[in-house]
Image (cartoon, rainbow, N blue to C red; front, top):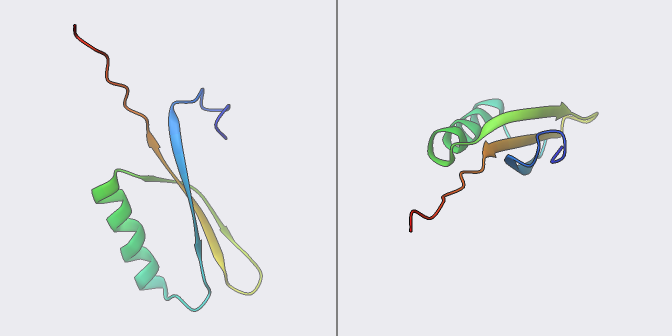
Length: 66
């Protein structure tokens, strides 16, 4: 995934157990998006109900002005 985007994003993988409710999962992902500036890149639902989501956000590079 890193090479596909030219190295401009950082990724975070979150595993969600099947016991976690849909509303709790939605709240957690919404908080990550609002406060951490993450966006949903990929989501997989496995047999048995477990989920894995990939979040990504742009890497902001600060250049020196000196």
